[in-house]
Image (cartoon, rainbow, N blue to C red; front, side, top):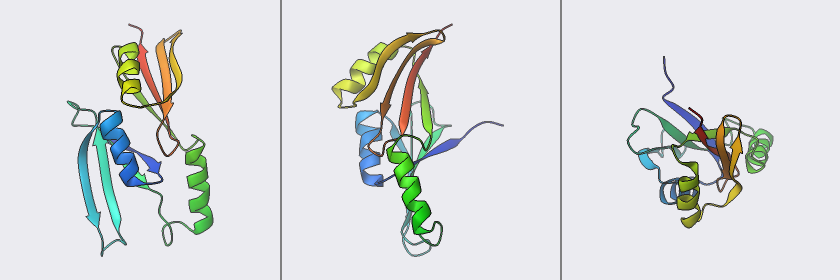
Amino acid sequence: MRIGSTHLWVHDQGIALKFWTEKVGMEVREDVSFPEEMGDFRWLTVGPPGHDDVSIVLMAVPGPPVMDEDTRKQVLDLTAKGFAGTVFLISDDVRAEYETLSARGVEFTEPPTEMPYGIDSGFRDPSGNSVRVTQLNG
């Protein structure tokens, strides 16, 4: 068994797609819309180049009938605060990633910092999702 994909709630799939591809450097895996069958549902995934077996689903927060409006608002609020989940990205050179991503307009909340397990940094996507970029010791 292995992980194929994980998902992030996003406020706007178009903005999320642009951020994850143009700023973070991911590539589109799938972008499929089901306008009539599923009420404009869009399956949108991105992933790191060269790692075709893993992807991040950029999932719009659904409304009724999937989620009632109160629940939808709660999910949007938690996502905006960075508490709906975290993506952990592993790099062989966090400092170089930090420089590259910063030059592309990614605003880091935490610069590369030495930790007992390696070098760690963090940023948030336009929806507020927490993203860690880590270089592990070893």
